[in-house]
Length: 163
Image (tube, rainbow, N blue to C red; front, top):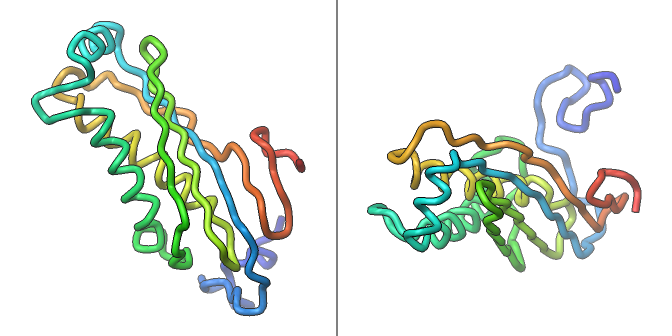
């Protein structure tokens, strides 16, 4: 793809917000994930404490932060349109040393919600790091990616291929 075809650049190659005024309003959904990998001893300590640290209930705070992050996406990503999300669901599942965060968002709108899903998952992951960094700085955030999207020009499945 050449830069002249990027939708966020005008003819003079300056950044611009895409005009979505002529697009139809459709149901838009997106799902993204991030993983947080804890050192084994930290994961064991968290599990033994019921995921409560001196900072509070780790999974609950990360869940709320993810929702807040998704709702604030247009304030964080300069060319994103502000969207009225109909729903934002954060699921955090611990599997041994790995926390898998899945953020699912939807709205009725003229533009997709991929960035909101990605932002929600990443803010939840960053919050887990913040809540647990006193235990170790060897925590790794990885695999932030879009799992699927529907609505608009194309639907994509979890592998990023046409559905």
